Amino acid sequence: MLQLELRTVSTVYVRALLRLVESYGINTSLLLHELGIETHALDNATGRLNARLVHQLWDKTVILTEDNGLGLKLAQSFKLGSFRTLGIAAMSCATLLESMQLLLRYHRLVSDVGAFTATINPYGDIVITYAEQFKSFSLLPQQIEAIMGSILVQARLLTDQTIMPTMVSFKHVALVDHAIYQDFFGIMPQFDAQEYVLGFRRADMQQPLPHADQELCQIHCQLAEQQLDQLAVAHSVTAFAMQWLANSIQFARLTRIDDLAQAMQMSTRTLQRLLAQEGKSWTQLVDEARCNAAKQLLQQNLALDEIACRLGYHDASSFSRAAKRWFGVTAGQWRNRFIPS
Image: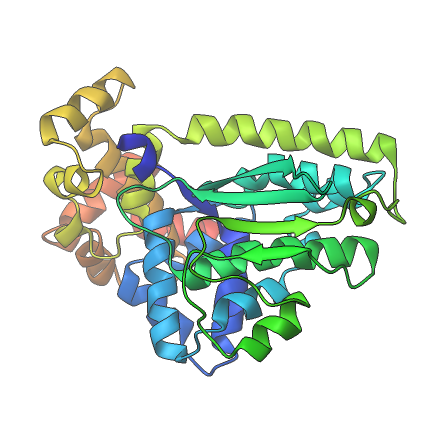
């Protein structure tokens, strides 16, 4: 269960969703605030958000936009260049098949809430199947359509051709008018199916890509492997706890270890034991999270009383003592030193 709860999604993906939602006139800053997500958590291009939070974000956006076709629209908006290392590696492959295999292999860099497999059916088609990794809850149908639709969009972008799939199937019912699906995929998907499937003709997949560069591809594949290794390290109890704390705006309300244990679906005793195995304690984590948050809040030129309240301190003097311990100077001096007047 722990491994499931530690799954994450790239902030690049989340920012793309927020840009789309903003086009509906929705205040995404307020939306993030309601979910307890700090906007600065999305600034890092290699950052990650907990998959449960992203699921909640999707749920909210579908309700607010009143658009069941949001997933297909998000898929259409994706650009390979947004994911830099992965995008360059995919574009520099020799053929579309190699590029698709690469995208499926490194899909975890975008999101590790599900996994792809690729097989060849009796007709010689390349069949890509997607399976969710969560067991405690299911992804929204709009999330699934964004994932499957983006694979087709990338194939079309890579070849600069309107690649037509040979089959498309979803486990859910149709969310929008059939004409919208027909226009997006070029064929009518099968709904209420057993699997999420996208099929391609082998001849289409063997097409050479216009920007093939073997050396460039190898370099960026090595970088992608390094990022996968870093992602594995990030899947620790400590990393999840720090992310959970960083996404909490009101520390006074959300810094009980029992709350974190509940979020990770384990007992408090088990959580304490796992943290100890990683050389950490709950007190240390809260202190580190408060220090990180204090740096962000001080840069917003907020009053010290307000910062103290947000971080869960009873008064400004308690926060001031902590700041002196963290920075070696007072909070005001730290702000003046690092923030130009």
